[in-house]
Image 1 (cartoon, one colour):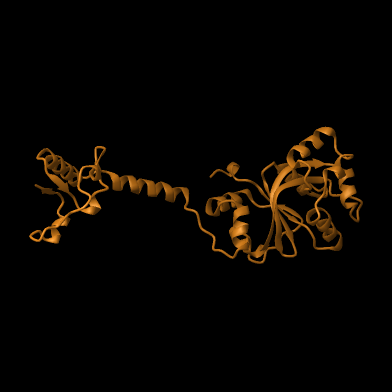
Image 2: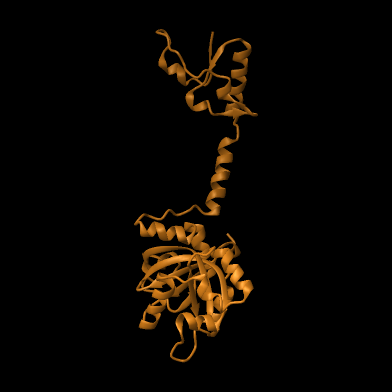
Length: 270
């Protein structure tokens, strides 16, 4: 799978100090409303949010200015996944719906940090799911060290996300599987699928033996006989002719016919 085909995955640390815990409570646990944002955003952005949320409350989060935060925020596109980390666990997971850069709205929601900045790189989340998964369960799946803990606002390496998607599927489904305590199913690789298809085609290539069986089946029919082939040969075909369409479904034994005759390649019954 090409990298561009995988959704990007972002990790947001929500909590860890009193201020961040309050933000977590205010905007993720409690959610926000469209009425709260109307006086801060232009009409076109309000219209986008109305189309997305249809009047429902929503989760919104933001990051403070900084070179890496801005780069990551710029990479966010609708449909990308965001994992919200709090107290060692992934507490929420959802999809990016929209983003805005707005200091006034950020100040309204979260005031300012100690240096006078605010969380102006904002992003709105849809299809959120509450989860309760220790982050340490994700570490080996994304190639992190066992004791890795996310910090601030980060983005998982796109190659690691692509490998994850190939191996396990969508991250939101994986989180639910882990939460239920179920074992992850490792998806077959593209190479494994191709190899299996090749092997299947090879197995289906008619052999000389198949051809001889088919000719004997046809001769038996021309002689107006009932024709039998062993049960394991019935699914075979030759040049588009399926054996099972031309032979008996059941072999009716008589007292003078031994059971072993059922295993003969072709039997004509007069």
